[in-house]
Length: 280
Image (cartoon, rainbow, N blue to C red; front, side, top):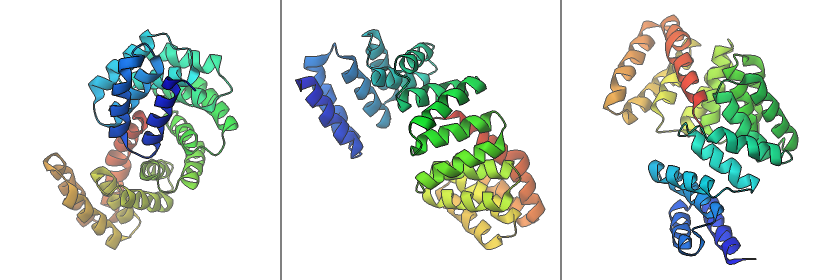
């Protein structure tokens, strides 16, 4: 094992433990010896992105790509990192990774997720289905497949894939919220309300999730849960959220039909569209 490999192994172990700060510091120190190594810049970019240093992370990904990496893991990770910044070079990096390593689920996953968000529905589903065949137990693959179906307005298969994602990782609140919104959009309000409440409880600081759960609960007559979720949102709401909290409260006070209408016609579709476009 080379010193570079030892450095990356230590950094990735720290990342797996959630210690992104130590991982980033280790990789920054490593640049003194490995400034010409794309993998070091790539994983440092990942760590810095997790620390909220988006601008710095973007430059790391650009530097990694400029070093012409051939490792498909690095290419796919760099491409996915650049895609978050709408960099046009992301597509080539992701496509090259998928074409040169079609047997790796991660390359098909990241390329498929990119294609879905760029509007290439059929190509995205082809890549994501291939990824799922390679690794049927990966919750991220199931989530991205469900998201791709939802972006194509195919809510039944979207719900099936997202149900698998929830089964594989029941503690992922983001997935549960998106699943709940898809169920509501697919006219399955009782199931949707249950998933939205579960997701909102897992994501305590997610004000929008609390509000969606409040409306969904009220729409099916679960008034106690609806007002509980409203209060959860109110406690955590910042100034920019206050108007929405008051609007939801007004709908809850207006009765079940008023709450259902706001969820179906306003908050639900807008929230689903925005969350599908993001990369969790």
